[in-house]
Amino acid sequence: MQHINTSILDNDPFLNAQDCSENWTNSLKVIKVSEKDATYQVTYNTGFNDVINVVELTLIPNGSTYLIDSIKGW
Image (cartoon, rainbow, N blue to C red; front, side):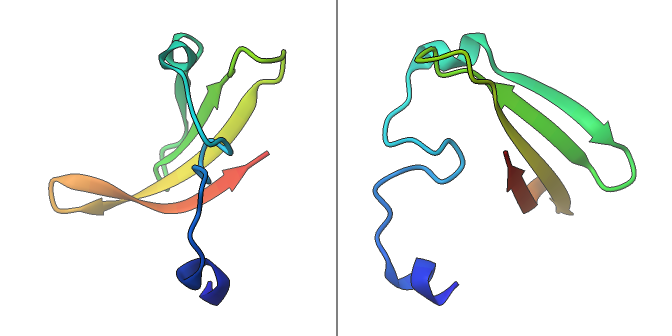
């Protein structure tokens, strides 16, 4: 964490990209994979290749909203 706290990121670590296109939303899918711990799988395709990007998010309640508690990508 120290490295991240002192570095300036020039890309989005969630998307693993510097720029994104509005067209990405055409392939965006969100699926709830666990009722127990509010885990969601988010998939999208950038349109640059046939690779489907997968991100798994676990959320925690924060008043009337939610915060991201953990992120896994592959």
